[in-house]
Amino acid sequence: MDMKIWKLSVTLEVPARGEYRVVWSALEALDCLMSNWRGDGGVLHRQALNACLAVLDNGRPTDFARDAFIAAADESHIAIRPPRSA
Image 1 (tube, one colour):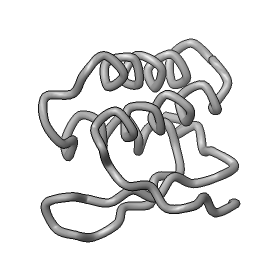
Image 2 (tube, helix red, strand yellow):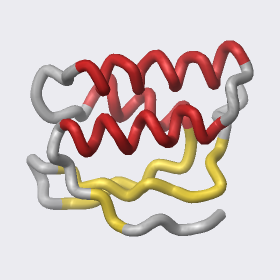
Image 3 (cartoon, one colour):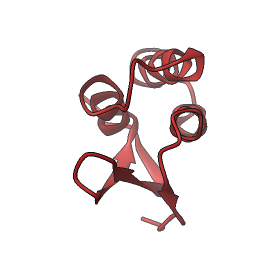
Image 4 (cartoon, one colour):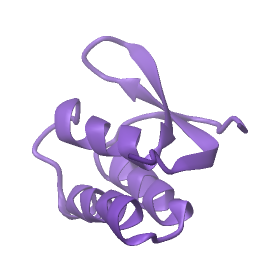
């Protein structure tokens, strides 16, 4: 499966461990949203899940998933570091 790599990574804090995780693709974001997310997830969390699937399955632009992932992190009060380029 094509991971749908982003031009700019998203580095977010893993709250339980005080570590950071660098996410480079829609597939990695989907994994993060499904496995290590703080709390139940809200509306933006569900939208980010759908956005990642739309990029992976339906060919939507990769920034569609990246933007939704960042919004979901903000909604869940997860700290994000400045982006790095590929």
